[in-house]
Length: 327
Image (tube, rainbow, N blue to C red; front, side, top):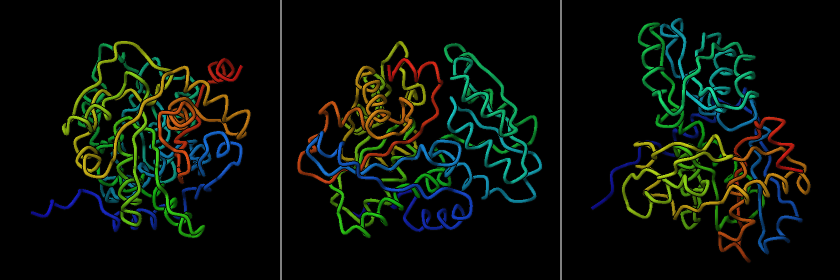
């Protein structure tokens, strides 16, 4: 029996690419010799740290906001995020002249909160341990007649994030190279769902893997179990952008079909990867954006002799934390 079609397909990503073309940065595909020599593989990096707002999140946010009918834009948008989705939505709303309200955890990095405000958005803080951010956001949206913009569990958001994968595919084809492994940082799963959709459409044998902080391994658990599972972490991770409890419903529908497995990296390995990116690659990568690189450098992936693509998903990190990580 044929499996039902997935919620997002290549055509949706192509359409998103057309919408984003005048506004998003087409980030390069880099292949630093120092990294390839270090792990014994041909490694390519997709540095979304160079994207507008400093992370891939602008892509999905802009694609989603652009899909809102003109008649419904006056009410604005509401989003909930620890920082990168917040900035992506705020920047997209500013471009489209829409009011934006973002519900952010009070312990989110100060730089992310201030940059979100800098794009003209109203920021509403909440207690990550005691309050439900989605409930707060839905309440605000209901009162204001605003459109809720989920961080990952939305087909338009996933299609926008999938343009990362589309660009990877186009650049690999231009180089005449087939990817064996594609590693993507994961929280709710929107980026990896979009990337996997684009990559597997052209390179069906490629192994797409989710990368998470150690302990915050809900995707790895869910992929092994074949159903959505929550992680059991009780504390915090320096990867503040990757702390979702459970994979999204829509994203896991895609990821359960397209992903090979999930890998993890300890905070110490993530810190080392951030420092490596600074010293050797001359790239500023936030901890959550470096978790895939960390897993690769720590030997969590059988990479030797293969063509490996690693997505560096964001570079928004507080200066004080960054200074400690690269010291």
